[in-house]
Amino acid sequence: MGEERASSSSSSLMATMEEEMTLTVKWSGKEYTVRVCGDDTVGELKRRICQVTEVLPKRQKLLYPKIVGPKLADDSTLISQLPFKSSVKMTMIGTVEDDLIIDPVDSPEIVDDFELGQDEAVDLKDKEVNKQKLRRRIDQYKIKVRNPCRKGKKLLVLDIDYTLFDHRSTAENPLQLMRPYLHDFLTAAYAEYDIMIWEVMESWSSGLAGKGWGGLHWGLISKNFGKTFCIVLINVRTLHSSMKWVELKMGQLGVLNNPNYKITALLDHLAMITVQSESRGVFDCKPLGLIWAHFPEYYNSTNTIMFDDLRRNFVMNPQNGLTIRPFRKAHANRENDKELVKLTQYLLSIAEGGDLSALDHRSWESFVEDSSKRRRRV
Ligand SMILES: [Mg+2]
Image 1 (tube, protein in one colour):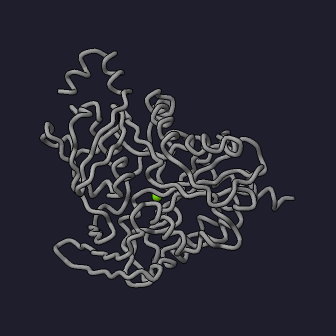
Image 2 (tube, rainbow, N blue to C red):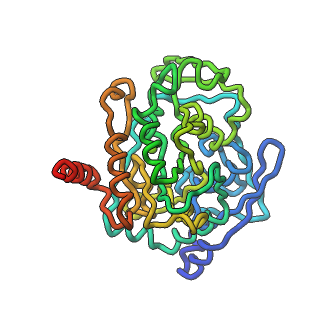
Image 3 (tube, helix red, strand yellow):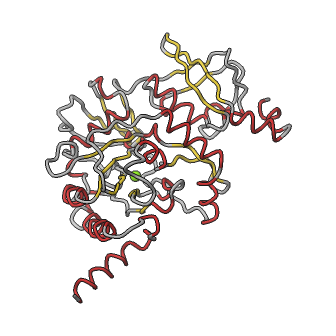
């Protein structure tokens, strides 16, 4: 119904897309309100609901009187395609993670990355609809500063999963899953860069086994139902939000209280925006513009670099992203992974120059080789 109305003329489509509406969501005997726009997706709606209820998007089931069929279950459905009315309440069914997490360990291990065509990537970044989403996110999302920004420093933004940590392997101790040289890397980078960590929800699939994750009282049972499922019991009520989880994880790796460097801020999945590409459909990305808007006197496109194992996360800032080789299968690869050592050299070499976005970070390895050759010649 909504679809027909919206497609009847392009001007009414634009009005529907941009219009912000307030929806009431009933959950667990209480009512919550969330604000979304027509060009937001159901996935985005779930993130807004997560913000007020702390029920993770993947645990939410949404019910709405007039919507039957798969549309409301599909995270890529646009809000404008659904006949929502502000006067009609939505019901959400879902459980907060503090009691039980059931994780199919055999869910796809490799998160698919993809390359967008050069033209398309440029297009996505410049699309008005995406710029608007970014503006709304800038208004909604508050970045909590853990340690003051430092004048004259550049900014390094780091992903966690597969970048700093192998979240898919199991271990007695999380330190066994940490990427080698992490603390050396952060210590060296800190001389020239403020550091922020931007985590997304992949980490909820963490399959850590045993006891030792911060003295939490939890256990793990693996059962074989043809597939392996691990059931993690967490008794700690403070694990509600994704931000708490990021803090826990980074705290356990010793990243938040290291005497040799300080983390300026942590960001979580609620800071992401959803974009839509013609060839790849709907996906989430990490817009650095959100950070730049919050700290304009410190950071901008000329002094920021982001490391992530997924190139698509850079789509709003293709010139500021460096695709790091994913750190997977920690037990097998721990001995030989030198990625952070080489990237330390790169970060320090480029810190001497000017505009970071003028560099081609895809060829960072040859840059490191060239500069070490130059040094040898001298
Ligand atoms: Mg990652």
